[in-house]
Amino acid sequence: MAVSNIDEVVATIRSSTDSAEARERLMTRRWPAQDIADYIRLIDDPSHKMNEDGTYNLSEAQARAILELRLQRLTAMGVKEVTDELEELAARIKDYLDILRSRERIMAIISDELREVRELFAVPRRSEIVEHYGDLDDEDLIEREDMVVTVTNSGYIKRTPLAEFRAQKRGGKGLQGMSTKDEDFVTNLFVANTHTPLLFFTTDGMVYKIKTWRLPQGGRNARGKAIVNILPIPAGVGVAAIMPVDAPEEEWKDLNIVFATSRGNVRRNALSDFTNVMRNGKIAMKLPEGETMVNARICSETDDVLLTTALGKVIRFPVTDVRVFKGRDSTGVRGIKLAEGDHVVSMAVIRHVDATPDERAAYFRMRRAITGDETGEIEGGTDQSALSPERYAELSALEEWILTITSAGYGKRSSALEYRVAGRGGQGIAAANLGRRGDTIVASFPVEDDDQIMLATSTGQSIRCPVAGISRQGRAASGVKVFDTSSGEKVVSVALIADQGDDSESEDSDEAGDHEQ
Image (tube, rainbow, N blue to C red; front, side):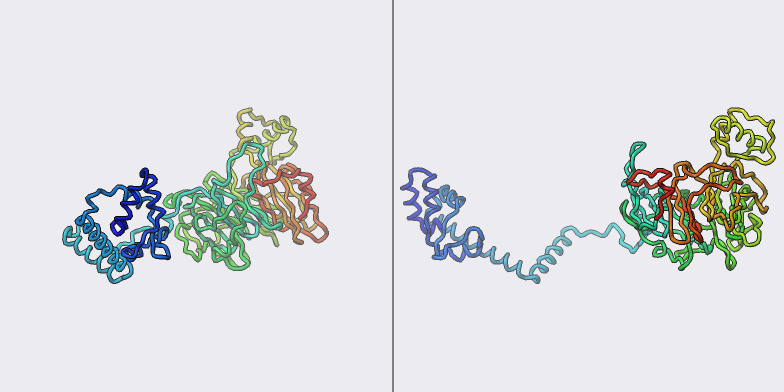
């Protein structure tokens, strides 16, 4: 622009008082641009275009560049250099734009450059490229993380990262662990690693195996997904037990699992029998028509099995009374001899306690004297037996409490020390006084003082109450009213509610006892 209008540019600069004025006058002047209009359109700066009348206003940077021009650039040779440079730049710009508009030219340039690189740097390949899929599968990409697995009474399951359940000081209100329907509630809650295998035992004798990471993940308030949509469990079949196994599978041969059926049979297997479980399940126990699996539990040889029947009989025998079976076809051996019309409703695995009848009788007398607790009756104990304080403390630490609930809504807690250890296959002893007409035992299992239970009736009513509100009574006692059932109504199921930390404070036992849903 300056070369094309050299005389006017020089006159403008000479007539200015200083460089700032000269720069301003160069910028405000509308310079004729006919000779370089094509070049201006070529670069086509959107923020600085030619005027509609064919003139051009210099920018501040351009005006400064003109003021800094050396006088030698204004000679004939200097003007020619500027003109030649402009034409050369314009030609290169046109060529670059043509390349950007042509895929064929772009690919040709890439090919030429790659050939040039090959000619300059090509050497024989040092690494061998072969097809190899390796031993990786989806599980290898799953991070090892502790998950809280939550299961509801109606069969919904989910996993939630343990980190979402923040630690709280004692006495806090807690965090809600799952949002459920009014008639549903959480029955099982445990922590398992994402790589921990879970065994699902169903009432028809099948077992299904799934890793924790395959369960649907949800937030604390999520409901989860129905188990029947995750595992191929037939309609009408329930889940008898869910068992996380943290031990490595190569150590499963050192663990035992005990099963119980509704007809009083029990069987013990090595846990390694259930290492290889296909996606469609595996037969855990072949059951005859009409017989169902009641429960399955991991046990050790220092444990006892406690079987309770609907007509009020209970038997306790050592796990070692049941040999380890090598196969899965057998229904096992007789655990308890059932009366006509009776069936097993509960199986529990409890700690074995080596104590003579005299020691247990003395323990209950000492506890009665110390705490005022009147529960505890031992058949065969003598009044002369004594117990040292050390032995009393030992038995107190080992004592467990068995909750028993009947269909008429009665319940009690009895000391497990009252359930004497007997031989497998006997008729058992009384689990409760069922003097009420038509009353039967619905469930019997170990509980802690801070546990809660949910009772459901044949008419769809349910009640949630704390275990601490149910009286401690002797093994043969009839219990206290836990659920005030109406005429023709019976308690049909009892579930231990997993402590998931409700947002609301626990209700008082009296209020819980009167509440119906």
